[in-house]
Image 1 (tube, rainbow, N blue to C red):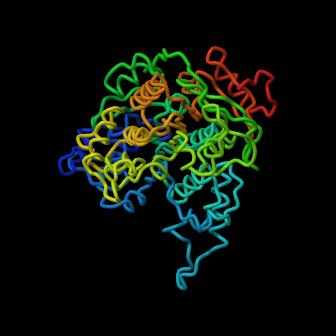
Image 2: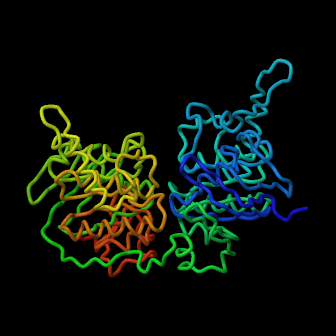
Image 3: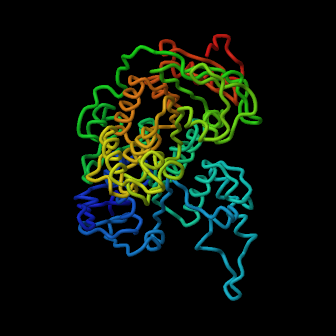
Length: 504
């Protein structure tokens, strides 16, 4: 009998004009957490779809417990104990937890086909408790947090007797505390003999959890290593094909005049008494645990949900911001955290996405000047280094990192002076992170004032000139780059006490 529960040998998957996987090898042991890493576009998504039966490979063989298998659809993979939990959880928000867990394999009375609700609720409760959750199985799915929804997805996998669970970027939208809870659940599953493929861009996930790591690059298998046998720098080289000498670029500019100042800003139930200033060429990092009010503060500055109290000064003049148009007219731009749902129209061409904020300037008497639009899109796509062979390709053809670059390019079509970036590198690989960091530093050196919300403390420390740490709607501490550390930030993020050194 094979020592591996899953083996892939020479898997190739071709689409018209594209080789999505090229001679990929992989193996997985029972009771193992095996990390899969690679840049966006490396082939990880296609890899998952081959294992789960969404795609049939063009060439190559797949084995379960030593026996060759072929899947014609996901149902066949699921029947043999393979389940996947995706970054964007797919569920039925208006149905209960129990209904979501047992969707497609409901327990029914044989002759009448009536559903055994009592038995299903009882089993759902037992599954949730086995994962350390006290959720009521009758709770509506749509009322749960992302972390809670992922726990339900894991329970759903266990309800179908899954022996292999694929977790795709499960920590991308979680707080530090929620990630730790997920780690514990994952380790518990491993100890019970479940084999887990853990896909993540976060190195801390891999080092915290995985026994082994496999790297894909440009649709090809690069190698597999025991996690304790490969150094961080070696892993980056394997993923991107080159050494990234410095993830955070040097920022050399002097700060200029004050662009933005807020005094005593508040929004009922969200945040209170926020004061800070932002200068030309400055990157102000705003961090804290999810739920601290960071995004709500910046959305108020952009007029999405206006503030209730306090004052905003732009270039020294008091202003009132009630709508996004007010903010943009002043010169404030906002890049949302969720680029796919809130920043881009993925079914549109790259060029149309980039020009979306500048339609007025490239139109005359209601007619769009398509030459101006295309020229603008090409110039800005080149400026932020979008990797594409044509700006007429659809935005959904791009990797996550390149989609983010398109969203940045869209901000640059109008005459802005302050740019707000909400989690600018969420869900992108290390190579794309490095490129986005360089874009942000270049923008700061060009005189833009930048506010960056980030949950990644190395990112906040590496990029920011100053850091504002928030806890439960208040800024508890301001830090200069010179005295910032992860320990100090975390302490301030978990403390309601406002430090005396708070000088915004």
